[in-house]
Image (cartoon, rainbow over all chains, first blue to last red; front, side, top):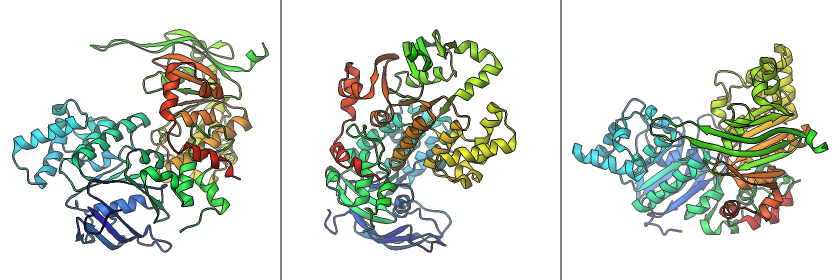
Length: 284
Length: 275
């Protein structure tokens, strides 16, 4: 836990309600903080509200949604974005999305996209921009930076696009990166390799990281802390090395619903729904 | 030879070589593999990226042909089967495929119902209304809501789409279902449901399941037997418990060591709680 004032990000009583949402809001009175350089994973099933929460932190909330509560970045309160159709990039916060094809500009070269981001951070010298871009592309494992820089997103493979996206998010030296299933569009094995390299780079750069994921078992391997989200609420916060001590039934259900080398002989796998059915799972 | 009659698909000394081009050397993806798929049983094919497991799956499906050796269905050479249009159709009905990526394996402009009815028309020669009715029956038997058939693939979740992908393969009641990484891309919380469904399919319809995956826990759960691929070769093959508990090959031991993480003991203790 972080003490007040030292946190890189503080989220206080954040609630996000989509227009027309009459039942529980998508994000329901959520409070947590992230320390400088800390890697926090936000886990939950699809529909739990984890993406909506990540978007609100990154400044990309649906303009028609109602956002209440407070966000503080390095102790300074940041106002919720105005109801404009164009989301703006929140200073000091970078986003990495699951689908790089829809978040990279399709008609710009990779070089132009880096140039736009780096200019935004005050780097204006062309040679400097080029050198930094090449350096970041190499860091994420793209071994032919000249070719990648001259390419448009559709000329790259899915794995290359995702690496470009990660480099683009980190090159502005953000205080916080919000990554929503950053390797989710890759096949399973490329995904693991890309994730490992992303985590290493985030650790090296000292940025705080909010990682949104459905896989609690994967998150425990690299995160410092895990927040478990269910039906819009953060139901449990755990140190990653204490996941086995989880007490909330939903967290325990998430841990048990996947096969492991210890339980593969069971006749049927428990599912999260089956926990719901037993009445063991109560909101708390 | 009673066992022999229960054998569906056989790989006999199968090698698949890809020709090089330019500076690329030629590459042996599958190297002298002998493997039999038995009726009503599930076999897991595991290995890392590049081990040749997906190429072996494609060979069983007749999507690529062996450079050496043969694939047989009920003792007949697949190359011959595929050369005759009517026998090809019969083969496609009997051996079906489910892919990892459900976004690219569904036509985004066709409703799920339309997509599911199509194999019944193409492979069973049914008319429009019969094929639609069969799609509804198949979906209902898998515990899915037939009302969802009117939706487009983009209007259901990834987990639901994978269930419909299974249903599409099962419409024609195949003897063999080849599944290539079918749960790897799904939310962990729906992986279990899909794996349970695959077990039901094997047990209720007697469908043989070829489960290709790099994930050992999911494979061990679904598979009666496990075949381990390493650099194109089949290095180990046996009943699942034997392979997991007494691995013979060094590579299998490494694969197992990499998969056993913390927290598994918890899963053992609680595995029995489901109704």
